[in-house]
Image (cartoon, rainbow, N blue to C red):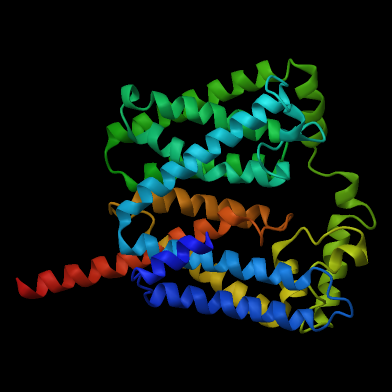
Length: 368
């Protein structure tokens, strides 16, 4: 990835005000992380952690710049993502069902994880391609979206077998938001009726598939265990939510943070909250930069996601995935999820495309 970014920059990849703003915010975020390191007596792996954070930030800037340079590059980007998601899903499903060689490599604690280290990252990784499948299913003629139906079912099964409550929640958010947004965007009553019909049909198919899957003891046992809203490690006296409160109190006394990865050794578990993670691992400076970044990304995407543009489908699917990540970021750390930075880069790149579009439109209007 570093070689790819370097090659593109040497070939003249342009950084607009949007890409530079993204770079500035991420730089401030990671400066906060560097300052947080100096609060540690033993550096451990903290320097490497911040180096990875900044590398991921640079990938977001890169994807924003590539998207802005030509919106048509979004198509191979999404195609590549879909291929990767399908392959890792098949590995996860095959590993869970023990029908492929070295099946244990693709599961963890009885849960599918594909080519990832953690099922809780594997599941959320699949949400953006699921969004893309949903969009194609709802907007294309039935005869032309059979492939997307098949991909949707494969990805959905992989999300189920990841037994990640975060991924399940994100899947439900996507299943609700994408049809609703498409319904709002369109004024064609026939198309609206199609959305309603396909949405109901999809829900019935998913419900039937779920009932069949739950007849398998291996699946039903873990499903009912994971489907509980609260576990002991969430609500116990020193559980996840109690640690959130203790961490918040600690952050008020530590303006420069406590150091990357220090929360876990202090409290027995990681923060499992992206806001608290920003406060404690990146300090107040990093937290402020992160908040500004999230607010701007929300505002840019919300303003543009329903406008009729060639890149609108990619933006809409990415924005819904971004919203889903923000929701589950309250109970899990997402600051080192590579695909999260890709999603941010796409949204900012589309915002830059919109600015260029408006300039060209005004220029043409002025000449006429």
